[in-house]
Length: 315
Length: 105
Image (cartoon, rainbow over all chains, first blue to last red; front, side):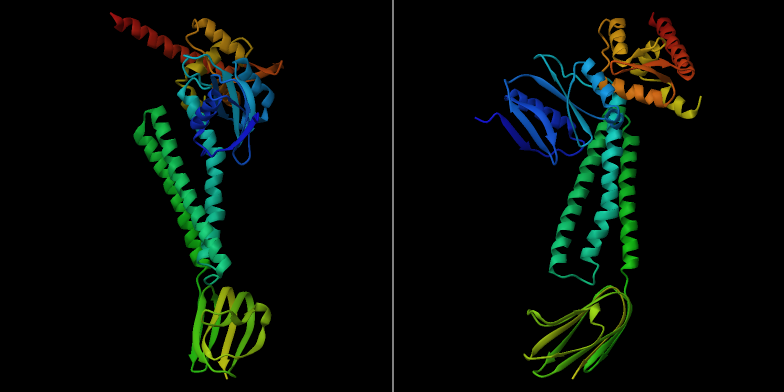
């Protein structure tokens, strides 16, 4: 029988109590916790079943002055185990029947630890969400003038990720709020505080969406003729599709010019088939495509901050 | 005394009070834990997470100062500001005690 065991287990950031209980329960089953590693692997060695308490502290100051920090705990009977995700893990072999011994003896210090966790772990997540994830989500769903298949997959992933984040924020806010209410006994003020924090997140999301909307706005002029179109774009951030019934031997002449900035993507394709022509901003000038198979064709112009002119004439 | 100190330390937690009380003589964190345990017949056992957090916060706020290190234990002593805060707390607790006595009968 193997003497070691590694388990992947996920605890959200404020769930350190559950984590402590889990490690104790494993010890009672004869698996002694040794260390935790990225991305949430808990390592155990086989041991005699015993009563062991585990405690997690979150203290960056302590990690910077590790010697004195660990000494303080070891003096009080807590053995240092490892650091993982900003948390420091301690253990103490406990006698049965003893009440749960804590590494915090008053609510003020418990609350301070929660605040350190909030500053150290939650605020960075909020910033990542608002400043990195959200813009990417918007770009891949609304940007690039509609999207191609790989982007659609990315877009779905980003939507799932955003939903996970939002759910996490909600759960975390509720956890923090109920904990702080229990500690301070001041439910109105605490609820107000967390509502305020949540409102701030929503406001940040709104600002990002609004500025994205501004930059993603399209300004263009489209003139349609019987045998084609002429597109003059100051800023094109959308996809324009035109449909034509083409016969064999028809020539689609695409003229791309006056490109100043941004990107154009052009394609000519029969419905549901691979494009017979795909071009981008490198193909400035005139491109002639001779149609070999008659059918119903879709001519598409997509832009990403694109400025310039695109002309199509069917001959 | 500035507003921040007043807000955080007046009144202060039992842990904070015992730390200042004990640091009238230089001592380290665990020394304070032991002293308080003796003073209270084991009724109050200060916990390491609370002690470490309180000591670093009080040092940052200038209520106590670092003296030297001995066997990886930081030894602290109370500062002038710390004494001032301790005096205010003592007066408050004395008043509490006096009032309790008066109202007891």
